[in-house]
Image (spheres, helix red, strand yellow):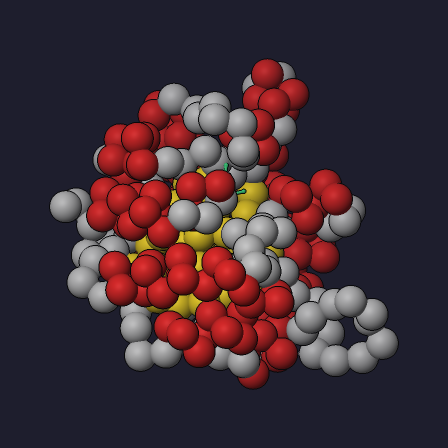
Amino acid sequence: MPRKLITGNWKMNGLVSDLSEITAMAAAAQDAGAEAALCPPATLIDRAVTITKGTKLLIGGQDCHANSSGAHTGDVSAQMLADIGATYVILGHSERRADHGETSATVAAKASAAYRAGLNAIICVGETEGERASGATLAVVEEQLQASLPEGASAANTTIAYEPVWAIGTGRVPTEEEIAEVHAALRAALSKRFEAEANDIRLLYGGSVKPSNARSIFSIPGVDGALVGGASLKASDFISILSAASGS
Ligand code: PGA
């Protein structure tokens, strides 16, 4: 199995005055046993790349357009992200799916663009509270997974994040058994499509990961790291999650 990956997602948070947090994270990433990445808002990516140059903290975007350029006011392309030194891009986050009507087909088109630009796509899937209550969780995430992964997806260019919508930013986290069950189902679906290579595709958990629950989440079989929102805004929290993933 690959080493665990901790990815911070700053969402629409972070000003130039917060760059010192990124400097501190980069310092901690140097001798961490797990890999670290951070997806700041688009406005900070260029500076984040500059201040993390030569460190092990990789920088990513939170979304990209499916086209590489053109008349798409307000959008950023995968090629543009790669051009300024980003290496990851989060795609299909539930906030994008809900706020911007992104379907899995949209996500797949964006992932193709990410691959063309040489980015690693962190593709998010997850059920709503209602879907879990009705017993549809596995069907929903498997369908999202299949429909969001385009031709050309591989272990080298794809990371999957299981993020139950109801656990994002709420402080509520599924039980260890629930997380293990979904990760096993996603791994099985990946194995069907990618055979042995599926074992090298990282499966992150996301949704209210914080320093106090990180160690137990990382001990769940099949969890290869985390996508962290709120707790990635402060370097101290991010670093303690990173060290939990490093087993130290
Ligand atoms: P959270 O967000 O850690 O604040 O719950 C996770 C995410 O949305 O990626």
